Length: 487
Image 1 (tube, helix red, strand yellow):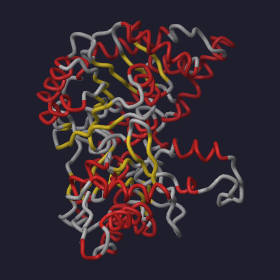
Image 2: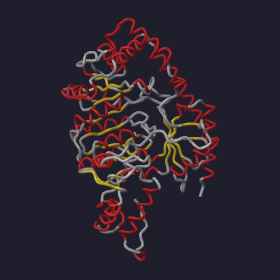
Image 3: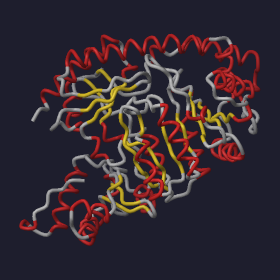
Image 4: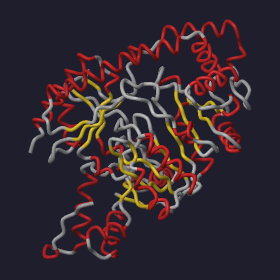
């Protein structure tokens, strides 16, 4: 963190306090963001630790920041400024325990920014997929067929021990065809891949444990880890994915209990972890006895290049827990994911699943199994893959056509996202305000970094949500916003 200090202009702790206050109020550090430790910030600024502690104490007394036991200091949401018995913006008075609960549980970052003024239908590059491509009618027909065949059986909880064996068998067969040898008994069905991530955390980790993550990484995974009070240890990402060569000193220093990675079309950067790095990562996890959580949210959406084997495919001894999802591949509202885990951990995860939500909807699971068994899922994947590939090409062409060469992008080989680095002097948060007025929306990079300030020159675009013509219009509007934001 860079904060210019001048001893001649006043106490250093006041200067630090004022600059941090301004950054929090401007949104550079949004609610839920973790601030550097007092020791780290003191070293970076070349001041004493007590100086930073005094600055943090002033911000904490004003309700702007607050500590979490064993985790660090975080920015609090604005409504945490309320005292007991005072009113919020809606005029509602809440008891003190609710204010305290909110202070300990700041809201996660939202994926969708507000719509722009004067643009009721801006070109939206956020979200997970294009509803116009969802096979809604076909899936509704499948659900009706399942109800006719199975009746009330699919409207109950179903077996809580081993849900939908036929779907688990189909998934195991699909993974085996991709070189990941497994059986249906090693598959656990989940309510979306987000639940799979949460189950692993609840089963393996406790508050204060360290998790090694890519930096930047999937924003809702970061929000989950923060909510559970986990310590985030970031590893930079380049064109070949997580920089594995930097990991071993972090393993020795922080002793993380889990490594979380998205090796295929990483969210948000779109990078793919190279084959050599996958093998190195697995070797390090084995040497230091650390499980790997492999999140393969969009591995089937490859448009060019050679696919690398899943880390799970390289794993001979149950070191890797593999997570997949049908939500982003088919329809987000399905909320169906799965994890593959070998050994005793599979039973532990299943018990956590049962006490979390009892079961994933049997109707949805049976309908999905039937949808896959008659080949419609595979047909949809091919159709969506062709469409998304064309949209990626349209985005790259529009960027070349409309944006200056100072905007940098590494063309993704697949997935849903493109990651852009803005020219020097352009702040993504300020650009988003201008972009809303111009009629285009994107996800600013600050949402994906452990330290939000590192993302101020980055934005993420989801090209899968828009048609080629809409993409061209959206990038043209982005170019207008960029021009208007030039210093």
